[in-house]
Image (tube, rainbow over all chains, first blue to last red; front, side, top):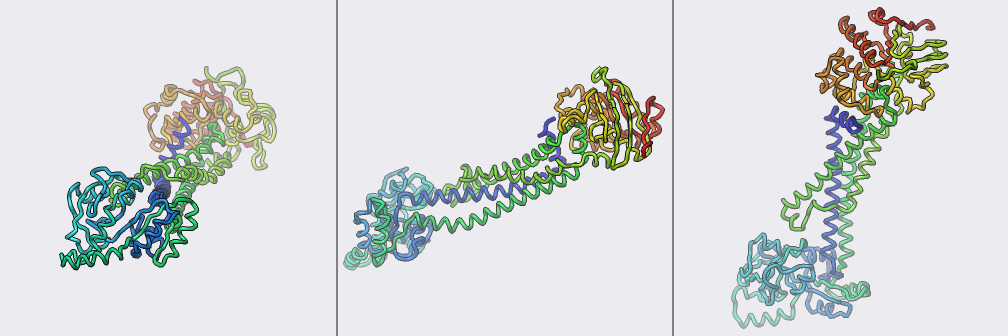
Length: 406
Length: 220
């Protein structure tokens, strides 16, 4: 016999109530764990995507939209910007490195991005197969694109107008020259090519119709003057740039500067409100669970009045009886906590594996979220709090009165 | 014999027991020798249960000393008194029997555990054997008849080899045959364990079997 065995025996005796308390607690813990994991990985993802980018330059409009479109690749850009104006930024002495981003087309459900080959390595990507593009109409597929489309090196595909598919550019097929390794970032879902590829497809409106070559040459000359890109990703040369460059960019007639760190913080704050609300819901569930433990123990105490008196007569001290009640609550709490954490991590892992979008962003339940360990003392404290009242009642129970009533 | 010693099992010295302002008992000196047995009788409300509670240190007399195995039980601090009671006194109640959450054997184990005694299962099974219920060791307590539960309670009272066994109305709710079985078990088991026996009852069927009687109610 041991105190644990005694406590377990009492928990078994009222199995339905015990299971209900555990289920409530587990549900609360699970909700909070899921939210912590999502919040943690969302924050990591956002911070990972903007790492190394100090400024995003694009068309005037919403800076958050610009960031979402040009970096996270989840929104449509507010417009294009003239290459000539962008070049002024690229040549600015406070700019250490910059990458153009030309958007507008998609292929096989994935975005086509015109940029420079160095971008891949700069954003943490590698070439898993083949090589980087060296000429227009050569493309490197992100790992998720390659997996989903089954395209292999040397195969060709055509882009379609718009980010969600539209008119096919049948006359301008791309050739797959490389496949990037998995990064767990937006890169995995992109098709990278030269900026010139995007221009080549769009700058010659007659090309698709196979028109008069003289007409085409005229259009090319016109297009060179009007060349545009969607955005420019900028890395500062010195901290001073953080003060001067955004102001300089915003002073240009058609340019806008978006500071990723600031916009990401704004994005997290917006998302965070939702996560906080859900976390509050989880905390309420845990509170309800604690209340359920309190009710269960109070009922148990009423049912167990005679047992407690009997045990006192058999030699149990008041302290021992209180310890037995506390242990009961702690056992309930621990089981609820473990079940809830396992459920939470399992659920996130399951979603990460079963939902392709979640898998693409590397959602996993096999990590500990920041702040998750605080759940352990919080839940135990809640369990202890729920025991306090019954424990005091047990401590103060009238032994002689109970025995006299039989 | 375990638990037996030259020291008297219970000694009352100048004891005045009052409950709710009513004097129930006044004794200059009363002693129960080791292995002795006494029947405490009296009408309902005469204080039989209170008398047992006083012997167990659950009720403090208005004055006087209650010595169990030579130890003034009321001199001990509460926690030590609890453990002392568990180790030296075995209890058999009329209605307050067994812990429902535990099976029969665990009820016996509990009695040892609560006072920090280590008692081998073999001895516990022997005790069950003695009350004729060795085959019920794994039974849930709610599966037992009242008579069986009472026998288990007798076995449990002897787990810590007590100096004295206190029984409160152990036979009142039983028919003649079962009452006789319980009486024989109580007397026989206490004697085998070398424990003194105090039975508080208004059950007149037990009277002929006890040479010494303490009649309460004179102060009512």
